[in-house]
Length: 186
Image (cartoon, rainbow, N blue to C red; front, side, top):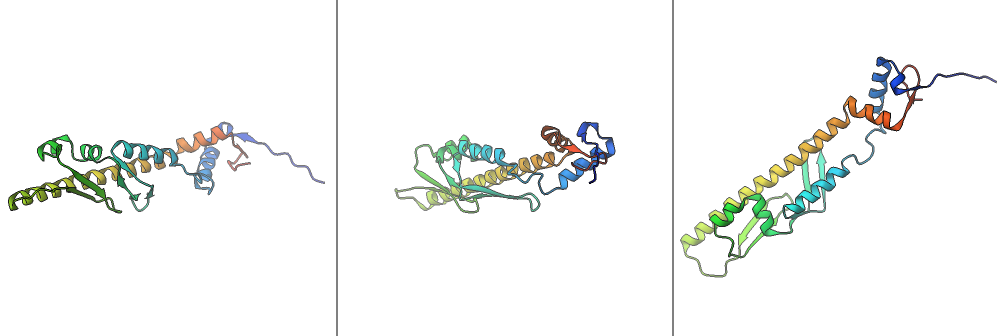
């Protein structure tokens, strides 16, 4: 029979070199961030979109590829969406308050705005209306593109923080991990 005695340390009792090893080992382990670290942001995004008149099934993102996609987006509230996307001035400028219109989103988040016009139009009125529709579509597409870029930036910032020494240290201390003198986890 053999008996060994091992000294076990709390993280804060390790020397600086051992603490650095403990932080790097945890950060690189397959168990750190193996959970859905973005869940709270995901729910925030869905709420923000809803406040802007948009709903969707889910999101897909790739931080390394710098991509953010909204799955099956649809307009839940035309007026709310347009006010957020292009601003009230356009609704007034294009005299849309008293017109029926439809706004939809493609799978790739491109806007399709169309005035539902039942009355006869002159060629000039038709040309003006289609120019306005094109302008609204372009403004709304830019708005959606900016939203996606902002969401991706927030995800990226959160991920970078979670990979920082400070966040890993907080994780270690919150979980009260124990270590050997050289910084290996016990």
